[in-house]
Image (cartoon, rainbow over all chains, first blue to last red; front, side, top):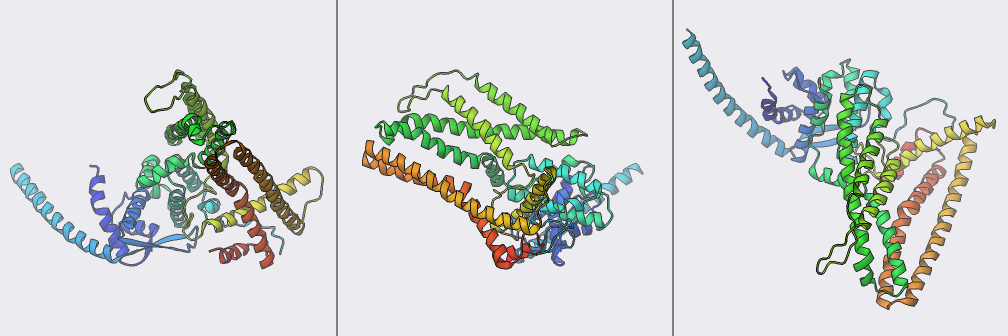
Length: 115
Length: 382
């Protein structure tokens, strides 16, 4: 099943959550997300999320020295970002609890029908 | 000033400086992504920002020993489409018009001057001229601007498909596609019949003139834009105060690029001298020659500017003798504006930059051969 749509819904919140832990940069965010279970996540998906969050004012950006290449963008969460993240976590928890409830009910029903 | 025999990374602040640090796999992928992104409607500043970000990610991933597919996934096309999916609409519209922006202004002003002059010297008023020749001209210029930008969009869409579908894609293929698309586009203009429109209140515009103006416009503007884009990725017309890395101003970036260009001129000069059997110039000799050339170019600009000013003054006097005072005033204001709008980007700005470059070398005791000259530039120009 193509999980692109599911990913779209949660990625912004997850990226914000990673940034809220401390100032970080693109490659590090990608590594944390992949280690956290987003196996198929690629930089082409992450970069537009970061630019969107920046445009919305949920994250701030500063240019810093990179040890390897051109200057690097370091991202940190803004107060608006903190509020957005808190609201996201609340809504996400509500939605997933409701979804799990329905899905697990459905699974139990099917299991009992199959006997 | 010390001789610099070692080839060091040139620091213009753009991602281009770091391409040599990428391994073969990463380099090939980065070049393809860059080619694809340049075939998108994207503002130069946004493009430089995106490519700098990607360069940093690639270098870090390479350092960690990851294959490039871990960063891009299996579909390069999907990666590129996703990577640039958040370009602002405003940025795209800006890029659409930026295609012919510089040439648009230069030709608009030169042609405005050329079309206005003969009727005004024959005694016609400015208003009458604009109602007649001016409307044909502007119609043609506007059509040409839109048409050349549209043809660019079409050719870029074709090239984007080629980049990932052809295993042996080369950058020169984009030139061939551009030429073909333009040939078809321009050729189809000849199918437009030559007739006059006759609407109340609208001046007669022989439409046969419009395609001709479009053709001239498209060909010349495309050539000029192509020349400006010769060094891939670099643009002296990158918008915004912060270019590429977000740290440096436009003037500082131009000066940084002059460091690299001056070193290249030094190498090229000595290669030519070697071919002719002449001894190579030392850095000190080249710097002395550079200083003399700077003085010469400043004098040439003054001379050229002075001659142009005299010519413009002659035209203004001619118009003053044959036209109404109000028309003379309007004509004078227009011509003075045209003069400075032409002279500033073509002569005044580059000469000022060159003078500043020489001044920084004189004051700091360093030259463009010294790596820490970049710091001198950054401290002086913020």
